[in-house]
Length: 231
Image (cartoon, rainbow, N blue to C red; front, side):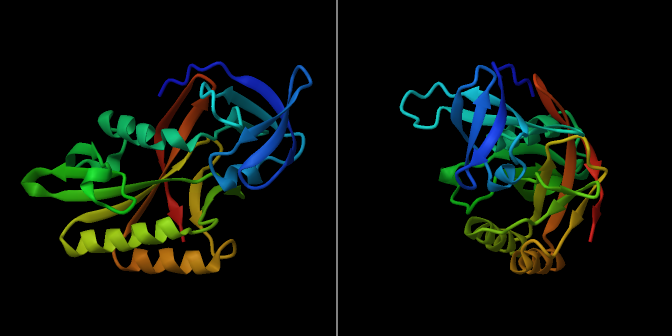
């Protein structure tokens, strides 16, 4: 996926909360920047280098979005609104080896009347699959780690996935680690024990969890490899 936007280098000054941080541009101006997910704010300690994109929406109070967080190990793509596009492109290119039995991938919308699902997959003989795309930003000991938390909407997604399995479909939580410095993914219990229990129970009941890593640069991001998941 090409990402050819003008990006402004900045440095974290501090955080208002889990979605807004203060950043100092190279000209000395301090601006508020929007985090697309709470986990992104967790990576933004004072002094962290960022790359910001200024929004074209004139009515937005917060004029800057965080596009990349710069870490010692490399760049982390921090704009979750592109996750569906990354998945679709990787599917179309045949990179997602777990979905080789599906020939079509359709983005779901509000008219499909589903709770939080992103894609419907179709294969020969009417085979069906449903996908929820989830970014994983946190890293520990070389692993992309999850879950950090499980919110209300994700609980509703899990319930919807169960209904789809009962109707005969396969269901997948497809996790994207938008960074190059993770060798594998790991399920953890200590960040959100209740959320971890919900996901673990869903996995035992047939919900498939997959994780793929990315190649990242300031002008291009793409899913390029599968990450094994350690439980």
